[in-house]
Length: 199
Image 1: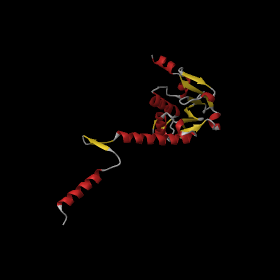
Image 2: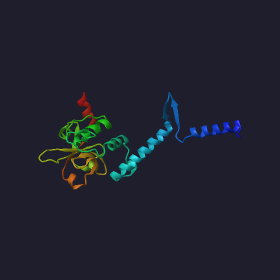
Image 3: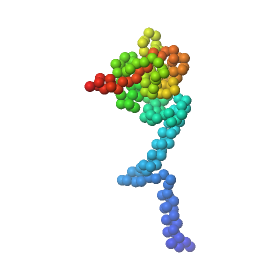
Image 4: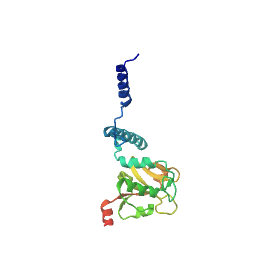
């Protein structure tokens, strides 16, 4: 027959093992939340995976991926189908993607269409791709006589994010003959002119 002392020891051991966990949590008012130190590690791991993923797409080292907000936005929209006039996850066109991206990541509001974006007075335009840097808009002529009919946002190493009719939201290369032959120019948002416009 097991003594009451043995039963107490077994019960205490079970309680200790049942409550033990490698994931530190605390309870407050019936809500369980993860220890902040642990969630920080999770964020670091998430960002590390995001950096590795997009470094692979761009052909750069992971430490080149520094704008986490930009790549989190891109990751949430990747593979969304193209839809002319669309502006949500069911389908989105190129200029709506740029409008949402710049607003979400940089809190910059731009016009809706690629033509309006191209002709905006607060965009400094240039032709040479040598001067491109992350966040520059890139404009293309893909339809007939239109001056501009497509827009993307430059990332790094000749790559840009866009929403194309063939691939939806995807990363493309300026070295691709299709894009290089249709390039009109690029534009860098001039924040001082944009602020003056808002006043």
